[in-house]
Image 1 (cartoon, one colour):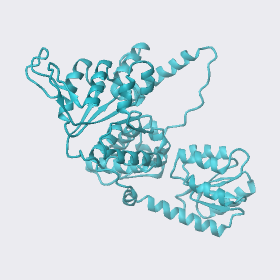
Image 2 (cartoon, one colour; image 1 turned 90 degrees about the horizontal axis):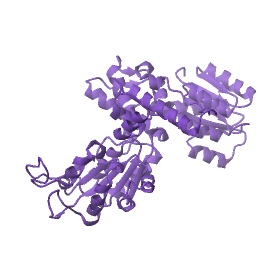
Image 3 (cartoon, rainbow, N blue to C red; image 1 turned 30 degrees about the horizontal axis):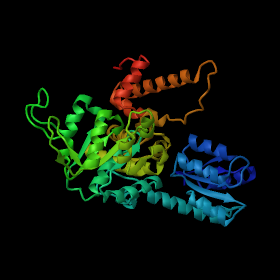
Image 4 (tube, one colour; image 1 turned 90 degrees about the vertical axis):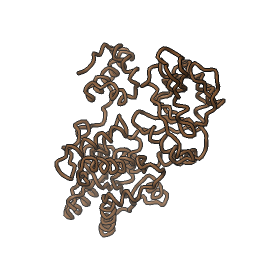
Length: 456
């Protein structure tokens, strides 16, 4: 029992003391809190395995504590204690993710049996192979892994969309896995044996983007000494993935709209129409509706692309996915680095679950790869994690400076975030942009605006 910690949350001191004394004799490490808010703070500050929480408290209810705890660390087993036991409260608690529900005054024999079930459940979940066996194989590529209800809904829509020819628009922050989802749709579709061609729009200069997409004829421009197929023709019969579609120039938006309407293209330097059969999947981290208002994105193109809409939430909003992703990445990088299958200590897992991942799944993958490479043992411990993870604390409330305008304060914060991202990536603007959710072009603009010199 000494390996498990229990947090008791109850506004009745006598009840806390009785449970604390009994459970300490059983070998548990005990934390206690006299209110719901104090209990939530204890979860943020300590490594907790199990929570026994009163239902009715002066500040917030046990159900409200449960909701907040699940956002911090969904792996904590939560038990509601209440003298106000009703079937309705029990059902609500279970729906929110409580492990079980027990009435007060607590029957200690009943509590023993309940804790035995919780620990048995935790031991089973700690087995990597069992955990991986519980994951559903949703698509035919193995890098798309999820266990959260939010992602289940997205994958359900994606699996149905895969069978159709409809265009798909995937939105979400940088690093959330938009291209992985696009590949999943392709490989789950009847087009799976045809090409999947990806185009990163911001990575191509505007002067080359048109020829890359549509191809060109010999002599179309200086240096065009032979004809060349564009990405649309290369993707014939398959899928063309247009990443960061929000950055496509207005003049090319018109041509793309024509392709979606008529299923034909023209190479540069040609007047001949070429029929194509290509499924379009587009992705962006930008708000296209806002760009429409700003007249930098065509409304008619948006509606053509947005037949099926999939929005991937940030990783911090789907923490149930963190453990399966950790297991996948640790196995992947253990094999790549010729190491035995590695595991994580409870302290390391606790810190990984509490971290907020501004870089989303991509950042988690980088953290796991780094930890596997640098660990000296088969167990990755807290000290093997980057400082940004093990030293992470929830952001404090922002203080208002009454001597400065809102714009001045926002610019100061923006400048600081850019400095932090560049420092974290050793001046790599591409990586810093991904962390901040900016294209490299936008990041360079902001660096110039704030007179931020190149790092390194």
